[in-house]
Image 1: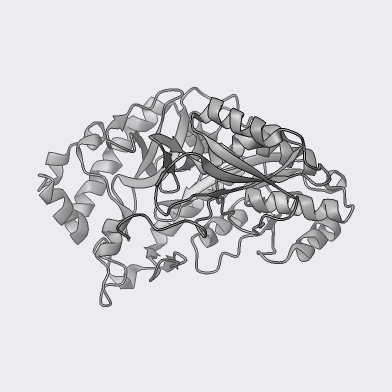
Image 2: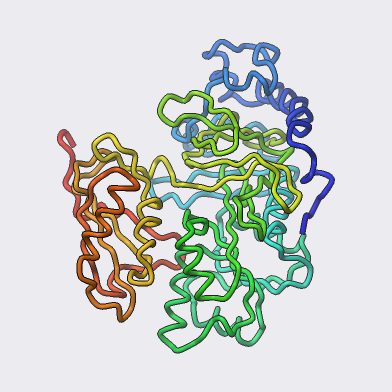
Length: 443
């Protein structure tokens, strides 16, 4: 289902041309209303909007780091210097979890919220759900931006069945009694549900579920993980991706499963950069880099060239579904990345290689770095959980080590663990475990 065909099938070069005018207006708005960007752009040599140019010139402007925004927060200014409207105009305020301290607050005007719901609606519709679909959501949205994505369900005419996290039995009962056809959850939780059902001799292939919409972490696009989930559920897996500071469910995958389409076209401008140098990477088919996003129509806390830390691969060829926007697959987050003797290691890429050894392995792994921090010395320790009733396969650890070395070009020390010994998560899985790591010198 294409929610807005006149927008989503527009040739991409035409979309870029149309986006130039709102981008220029957004720059004018930043200079007029954002203390943070007035100072930041002036320090970079841009004291007036015309000096910044249009979209064709955007790469000359500085990127925005999340830590920069945090640094401007005070008790008297809890949102930060990038707040660009009086509080009287704010319609809703979301927040991050605040696991590293005070939460980051994300205010929205009524217009900002409408942009978020529109973007999320396009992204979810891409999965093939529509009016009348009974869909279970497992996200305990609460104060988090996922709440705005849930608003999109009403826009699509879905029958929304919110279950939240932490109650697997209630979720399974809802599937059984209400005949839910779609579930929105993280890929790791979908895997946990499949194991839960198998332990109780429940065949999920006999259930009413035909769509698994996974988001919240990389994994849904990994071929082995996707195949494992589709085999267990007898349902199609599509993934979505967003980022709280910009928009939830900004990207959504269609049934052709060739990457996530940009649902925020006309609302958000996308770029790729080299994560090390910051240099612009052209948006060509097969390009890889860090995703950088710019608001085109935001009012409360508009962001310019925001570094998402999501490392993605991009496709620019039109999809068979008719949508014409670029598509992405998230390879991993650059702030989760480890460096093993000069090699960039994304935890999700390690899991993808390990999952090639299914069904002997369960799909759950734990990376155990020896030292705290990004840089690690080889071999990198990886605990791989075996599948249920698989036993200890002779030479399996060595075969996994050899495959990782061949594909990802770094050495590992693989340990095999019995099924069920590694932790599961009902929300985002934690692949890297620093609990046994030693502090680095100087810490």
